[in-house]
Image (tube, rainbow, N blue to C red; front, side, top):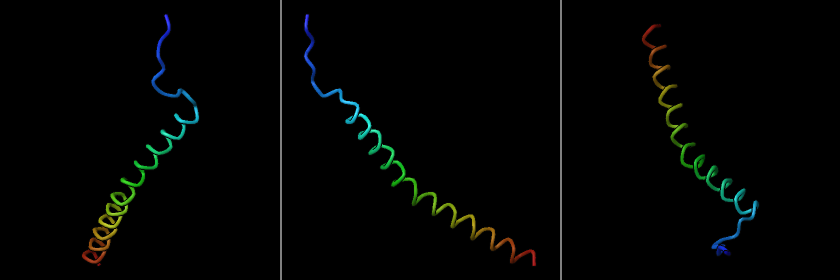
Length: 52
């Protein structure tokens, strides 16, 4: 019995798909991480001003 192949099982296609998924994840997470670092640095600066 033969099975129909609906899509290409090429390793290059899989690698390209994984690369795009990882890139999309970093594109979404980078601004959130930057905003978090800015918030932490502002809180740290306010804490230093209050201690002095």
